[in-house]
Structure formats: C-alpha cells, structure tokens
Amino acid sequence: MNSFVERVEPYFLSEDPFVQRYAIEMLEDTYLPEGNTFLMGLKAVDRGPVSRYSSPVLPNLLYLPLDEDGMKEVINRLNGMNKQDKNRLFYTQFVTNASTELLITYRKEVKAFVGEEQLKKVEKLPSLTVEGLYMALADVMVYLDEHEFNQGLYDHGKRIIKELVKKGGIESWEVQNGLQNNMDEKEFFGFEGIYQVYMAGEIQEESVVPQLASLFKNEEEGDFLFEETANALVKIGTDLVVREVEKIALYGNTYFYTLDVLGRIKSKEAEKALLRLFNQTDDLIAKTIIADNLCRQLSIDAIPMIEDFIETGYDDGLFCLEESLYVNCVMNGIQHPKLSEWRHLLEIMELEMLNEPPAFIPQPVIKEEKIGRNDPCPCGSGKKYKKCCL
Image 1 (cartoon, rainbow, N blue to C red):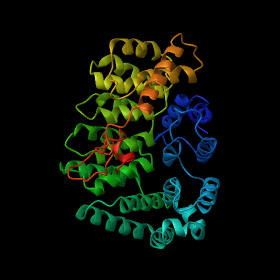
Image 2 (image 1 turned 180 degrees about the vertical axis):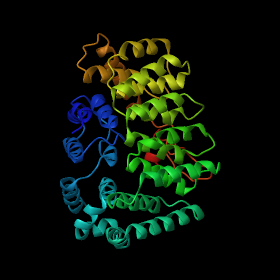
Image 3 (image 1 turned 45 degrees about the vertical axis):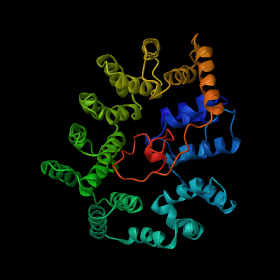
C-alpha cells in the first residue's frame, strides 16, 4: 500500500467528524488507494455518523477502486436492499464502475443491476483483437462527436482503452503522434484527442508530459479536456509532471486544474512546488486553493504560512482553511495552541448550517449552457457539478 494512503486510511474511522470527512476526501482522484481502502470506507459507512456534524461517507467511495472482496460485499448488500433504499443507487454505481474482469466473473450476480445489454458490450471486449478494439473505439468517438454527449458511452470508450492497455495495444509513439496531430490542428480537441490524453495517463507515458501540461495554456478549450488532462498527469505522477505543471500553474484562468494536479500528486516535490507557488502569487483565490492543497499534502512546513494567511484574510467561499489547518495538525500529531479554537469555530459553522432553514430548494439542472464538471452546481446545492446534477 502507498505510504500516504497508509497514513490517511485509519482516519476513515476517526471519532472526529471533521477529520473523518477531510481524510476521506483527501484520497479523492489520487489513484493511490487499492481495494482495501474501499472496504475501510464501508466500515465507516456501517459505523454510522459519529456526531451530528458527520457527512455521508458513501458518495465519497465512488472514486475508490473495487477488488474482488469489495465486489462480493457490494453484491451482498444490494441483494439485501429493498428498491426504495436511498443508498441503492450508490451500490449500483459501484458495480457499474467495476473492472471488465469483475463484471464478467460476476455476470450472473450483477445482471440485475448493470443490465443485459451493457453486460454484453463488456463481455465482448476481451475476445476482440487489438484491431477490433480500435475499431470499436473509433465507433464510440464518431458517435460522441456527432451526437449529444452520452456519459455511459464515453465511459465504455475508456473501458476499451483499458482493454487495449492489457493487450499491449498502445505504443508510446502512437500516443505521442496522436497528441501532436491534435495539437497541430489548432482547433478544439475532439473526442479522439481527449481519448489520446486518457491513453497517456493509462500507460503513464512520461514523454508527453510537456505536451499535456501545455494544454492548460489554451483557455478556449473546455473543462472536459482540462479535467482529463489533469487526471492523466496525476496518473503519471512523476517529478517531471510536477516541474512542468509548476511552470504554468498560475497561468490564466486554468489554475484550478493545475493546482489540483499538484495537490493530488502526493510527493515531496509536489509539496515543495505548492510552497513556492504560495509565495509567488497574490491572487486570493489561487492562494486559497494552494493553502488547502498543502494541507491535503499534510505539509507541516505550510502550517505557519497558512495560519498567517487566515489572519490576513482568505477566500472563505472556496474552503474553510481553519478546517484544513485543523485536520493537518491533528493528522500530523501537532498540538497546536489554536486547535480548540479552530474546532470550536467548525462546530459553530456546522450548527448554523444544521439549524438554518435552506434558502433554496435544489432543482434539477436543465443544461442550456455548458457547465464545467468542477464548477459549482447551478442547482444551488453547493457541490461540484460532477458530484451533483451531472
């Protein structure tokens, strides 16, 4: 198990609701956890809320990988649920996101939850040749480029790519040339280019890191490409990624993604880069994002800097840095003199939210304009769009 995961995973069962919530979110999209972490998350679900301030655990397990033990447990729980159970949707999504191998192995057990048609599409993949897989991927790309976006089909394209990786069907030069060809066209990336980015992450192709990082300079590209680029860079996750991303981290309006990359790569080099960037910018939003990411790195060196930043004023519409700093100190075993003060502030904030009637009733989103997957959801829930109405 990765050493960072080893440090964080035990806090999934913390009796402190603020530490538990932050710890579970800390590993999101880092690509570091293994199947045991998912099972630890289920233990946290089974234990239930530790206080009135506790946040739901189950939605945050969607980003964790499912191994065979996890698959068996999820199937058992689904079989024991009634159709009105509010958690059924999450457990069904765990199954739907499972690897091709697990879906085939447990075909009979998951058929009722995944659907016969989808299972047939998945079952075909291992028997296809490399050429057949590329043809299937081409069909997906053509459809996505010519029709309204379909998340299920887009995810199936990713499943095809994973099968290509297993068969050794993706060469480094193919990814290099594919990315370069799309960049040379100087037009918006279509799904061919986006899938090339995804391939780069899946084979951890370090040679294309400068190309990938440069994509953040084209602010006319959509959030979809930026998110996939960030994911690919995190999967590669080397010191070269950190160096290249740091160069353009504060460029234009894409710093949400670049700083996110540095926050999700859990390495000493990434921490150092964030510390440097914190001192380089006066942009309040960027500085706030960097501060939170440093706490998500469990950076001890950042603690006095962030404490001073809180005193001078930060963008509290983005994060509660008192919570970030509080958890950072707790998880590092630091008996900071302001721990009780920060904890009291967090309790007051939570009580206000619990006791205050909602100022709105979240409404389903009708997509008339493009909404970034990481933008605040326009329904008003306060969550990211990708974790809410998307």
